[in-house]
Length: 339
Image (cartoon, rainbow, N blue to C red; front, side):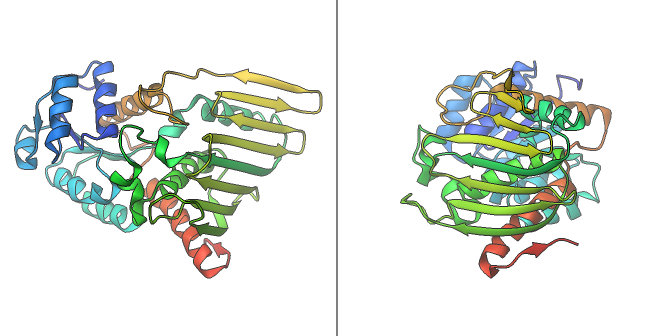
């Protein structure tokens, strides 16, 4: 593992920034520095986690961290990533949503020795890990179709604050839009890259924000599997389920219960997987803390070994290209194919 005396700067002390501080402290890393422009977040972080915090970025970077975790809203990632890369600081980016920004970071990083990795939390989920094995074992034979639905009621994301007060209420980084790449990440990891999309994206709920709250798409994977993808931020209760239909049977993944059910014609058999502990105050389908801990541990290991990232900026761009195609297909009413 990396030297635990190396300083790590956490940029953005909202819910995700504080989660990463918890992750790092749980893993035994205590040379942490916090930065945020909001004094209330700095006060809360100092009180809870006992780490030095700054509201001036120059003062924070002058502490000479070797790594930076960028936990700001997605539209601010580019600004801080470039500042870190310029100083050859290794970077971990939370979920990105803006293709052009990621492309700009990638181009800038080519002139630096910085390792830049992107979040891929769901690949560490016990269900995703087990499903990867089941697909390799061909438990249900050739896969024909996938039906995936994730609905995460927006007011439940941050119960301690209004959903109108953080980035999920912005048009360019709306809540439903954010959920799409989260699941495209692991779906493409298990099945294959996407070759075409036909989609419908709209606002249909009474949520008091100007965002698209419903993303529906038919995805065609390169291996000719078809997936109906339905993502919304108005489902009550929140839900995350995947049904996979194959030539020999069906698999149902219930992320709410951390359970996989398999039926190959002789009744349902259940596989219960570790559920893990969800951080206090969260509701709905928020993943357990163990996923985030494993993810950040993996990043630290990649920095230590100087290995390429398991999920790089190039990987992120492929996912965001699909997201952009979904929105483009909805506007044009046409299927979008990838070369």
